[in-house]
Image (cartoon, rainbow, N blue to C red; front, side, top):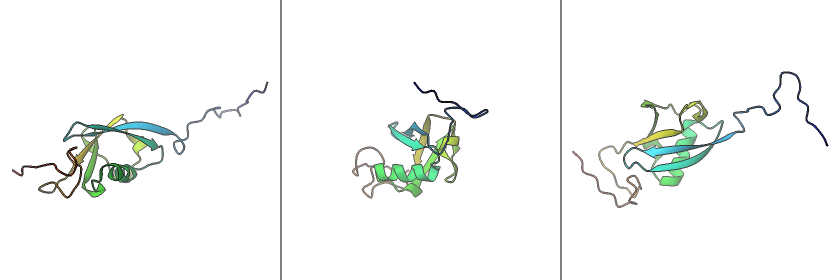
Length: 114
C-alpha cells in the first residue's frame, strides 16, 4: 500500500483554475429557457459567447451576458463570476428573424416592433 505525501505548504489536491471544469446555467431572459454549459476554469466571457453561438446560431456580437444585473466584459474569466446562473440578453437591433433561434421557436419567431 502506498501513501501520497505532500510537500510542506502544498495541498495534496490543489485547485488549479486552468484545469478545473464547472457547470453553469445560461438563462435566456426573453424566453426563460436555461441551457447548461460546461466550462474550463480559464475560459473568458468571449469564449462562452462563442460556445453559445455554436449551440443557438445567434451571433455572439448580439449577446450580452449579465450577472446580478451587471454586464460581463468579454475579456473577463467566467470563473470570476460568483453565480451559477448567467443571464443572456440578445440585442435584436429592431427585429428578429434571419433564421436565428432567438425566441426558442426555431427561425420562425415573430416579433412586434414598438
